Image (cartoon, rainbow, N blue to C red; front, side, top):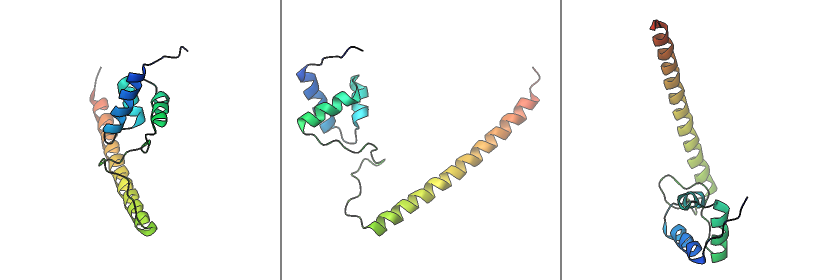
Length: 110
């Protein structure tokens, strides 16, 4: 595989784009620019820019800080309960759609 060489200006612009785009990820910015994420990571490290978490929060805010372990545990348990309820709902919807597909497939006389 041929190694691509990028200009210093392009690297600086990529680092600045990452630095100024809130809620962005290295993989997202790299994909937008058409470069490999490891290349962007190397440029960020060379520039001394801290790399944000791999999975940004849905609300785009910073991760919870200063949270007591009990509070974090309660928050995470509530999130797990929410996700499990959503999974049950989606499973029921899937079963309904599967039954409907079987019903309508039985009516077809091809």
